[in-house]
Image (tube, rainbow, N blue to C red; front, top):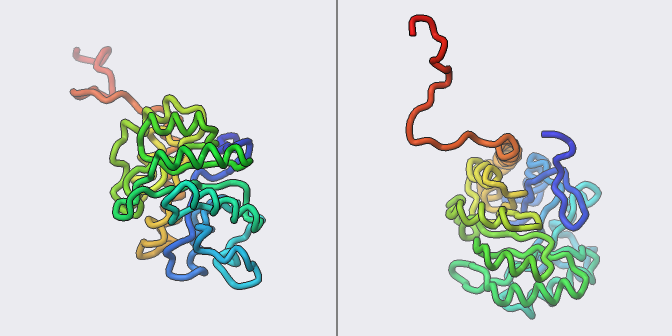
Length: 260
């Protein structure tokens, strides 16, 4: 992959197209090792799970080298637009970032987004000067509306959060990528390296994951596997796959063979 193939969001460039989370790790030390193995230069942090009002107390932020890794606060655990907006403002006021991975959950069991509330919160936060990356369903119409509302990227789910099911609707992700003018980041549902590769092969600009790495038997090894999977998938997408055919096609042409 060339050095010019950088991920650009809202004018900021990132060398890695793998974005990782900070939750569910066996320990903060293992989290830090996994981040390094993943080669990630952006990680998400749940604002509501970090003491942002008193940075003098120990927290997982102490295990993140902010000189190398960009912090992306997220509004995980918010169930209304008002909650999410308030949480984003809290993160900015605490000095974390004016960027936000915006989550507004609509259902406690499935953790599917509430797209109506998500759209409302996106409009408000964009107006308030935030760079908004909304987590949404794999719905091309919802993604288009979020882009029109000013989202800097759209983040359709591959499958329910933490399910490890992989990309459930490949065609929808392709459609979202085809029509989107902002980066498309597949978020949620990745279970293993092949899922990440598929997401990139169908055109996603990046993949965000947490559980697939943090919950693996060996999080550090899985983080490294995900790094290579994202790179391989991106290269395959740029290279362009051969068309699918119903019947065989000889790899060596038969024309000109002796005896024919």
